[in-house]
Image 1 (cartoon, rainbow, N blue to C red):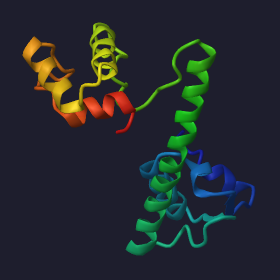
Image 2: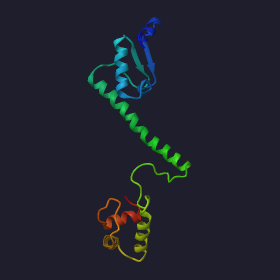
Image 3: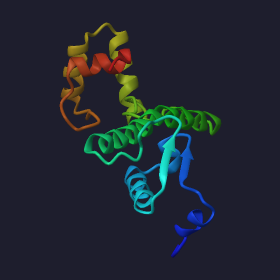
Image 4: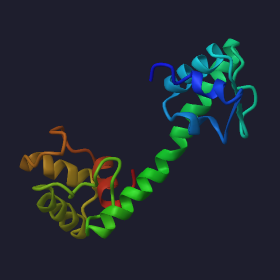
Length: 158
């Protein structure tokens, strides 16, 4: 890489044009390093999407960092959606984020069936929780059962 910054000058290049800042580099710190290097060697950087990339004032630097972070955050739902598609193609449940529903892990399906059976008998959520506690059936976290937890498990509400 030694001397590579001299080549554009030899061709008369003074301006580098990019579509948007994340096309320069995905990592915000790398973006700042490249911008500083371009500035140091007398180049101008222009973006079609963001104005004044070469400004060195603290506010402009913070805006560049914010925009880089914001773009990465916006991509998270797309990545999760792609993971769900991959899981579905692999024959998995399609759930790739967040806490797995009760009954997902080994050993929980028997307790889940017990919850459903007790509810079918007409027991309320608090009585089901009391029965599970009395029988020593553990929750996922090892804490005591509560009616609201039983309600959420059986109704699918979070």
